[in-house]
Image (cartoon, rainbow, N blue to C red; front, side):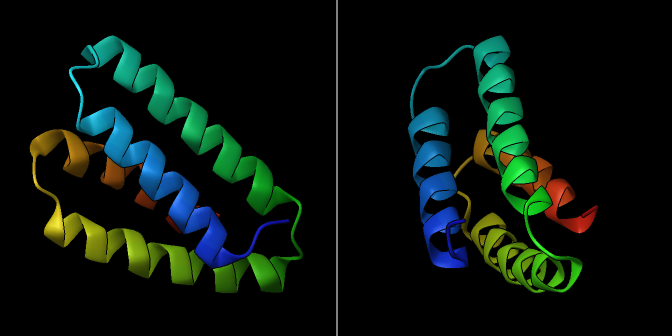
Length: 88
């Protein structure tokens, strides 16, 4: 199981690759759903206490990234990722 820094770095890199390119909206949605499934899968392997701590940390990181988002596509993707960690 990856640590919070590794998970965040991986998801952040995928986010910037997707939102910084001319990926069509339907492909963007598929990719975001894949990121969300991967994140949910990683979180499901943790104990409830560890999951709570990790989700809190990821939530803060994604929220801070949301405030700095350069475009609407980044904001939409980050909101989806925040929903994943908020509902765990």
